[in-house]
Image (cartoon, rainbow, N blue to C red; front, side):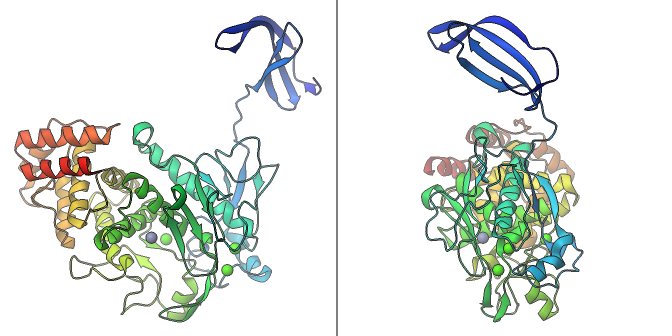
Length: 467
Ligand SMILES: [Ca+2]
Ligand SMILES: [Ca+2]
Ligand SMILES: [Ca+2]
Ligand SMILES: [Zn+2]
């Protein structure tokens, strides 16, 4: 053993299990060292001196790895002073953005390697084919990943940090164990091709990928050269698709309404974590500045002007269902955002609605339409919060024209008496570790209490069986 010690070395005779049936005599040696820093516990065979085990028992305050990111994007962090510049594709423009960086800890990076490969996201993009640049470019033995935004490694740090942080937030809401949602390394490619877009693909178990901007964005022919992984909103949106597809495979592409609901859910995830219903400000900043607009109410809509979305809108079902699912999604995402406002408009309200929305995804399958999704949201509130928010939910859906009443959602009338009746149902509270059991218990209790139509129970039973 080489190195500098901080105190006395102690040794204790022990038996060490080398496999399930064999233990050998060994010495357990404790080495408080300065360099390499740690409280090292080394087990040495008393038979031949072989090192059987080596570990560091020191609890480090800081996990060590860190990186430089935008959070969420330069337009928001600068208070809309950016743009200019219009992108970070040059050294000159990078200098103008240098005040928008934040240093953030990067948690969960796999030990024994130096790329951005961790518990919940993998920037080496295994299984992702066809990209025009290499994945896994960030590779730092120091685990300090600070790059300027005109360095292709910057976007890898962005994706790592924002995906990992979103997954940890979801876990903090209770989605762990049997209710975990894609709590495994998601392959991600930071520079898939040229274009004004980013995407989630269900291929090869699912992955997310980001494009590096475009010179003409139909229908407006505006140059939008920003690398799309330079905006956390874009990253979190695509991660929203990855999460929902893990909960309800195929729901995001099978039907037109399902597509719209999926876009709306992904947008709502962005709004919930960024505390802002306006999203994707950075890749669309040039266009919005040129056009003299702030936060557009829709996306690629005939009367609107660019890929910018805002969940504060008056989109209404069914007349605002659009051939573009992102426009349709404004109805659904808008309804979820409305609910946060009805429930107080603060962080607690956003996290409560996010929890309900995530739980509701467990009840969907690929045939889900808006009415099914609305019923699932009500059922999630019954399962998690004993239906305490049902009247608020029903009122929001009523305001958006989304059909749901008559199933799990009550009619948005009836006042205090009906609310207490619903809230007083003998349902489990505080989160269900098994959503399926939670659904069935909730429906059974609601049907017994006579507050939910039998059709609803049949509907959910069918949904569960069909999965
Ligand atoms: Ca860049
Ligand atoms: Ca670019
Ligand atoms: Ca925003
Ligand atoms: Zn999307």
